[in-house]
Image (cartoon, rainbow, N blue to C red):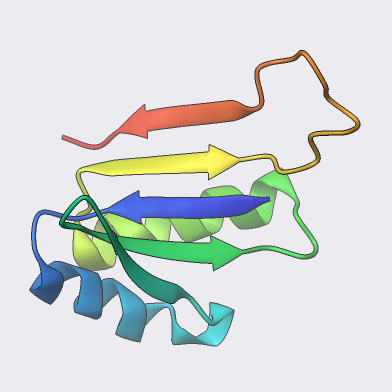
Length: 86
């Protein structure tokens, strides 16, 4: 599973990157939008929800997506859960 957070600016992205450094997040940009990506090798809903909660608290992203990357197992099924953060 991957958690992807979209930010309004690079300052908020950096804030999230520092706060969640123990999960080794990757900073990137997509169409000029700062993004933080966290790969979970042991993906449990509890851990994913905990990370999402911490992201919301520490760095206020405007969009967080939990992406299940096991596309071979779930072929044809909707694998994304998207949550708008307002």
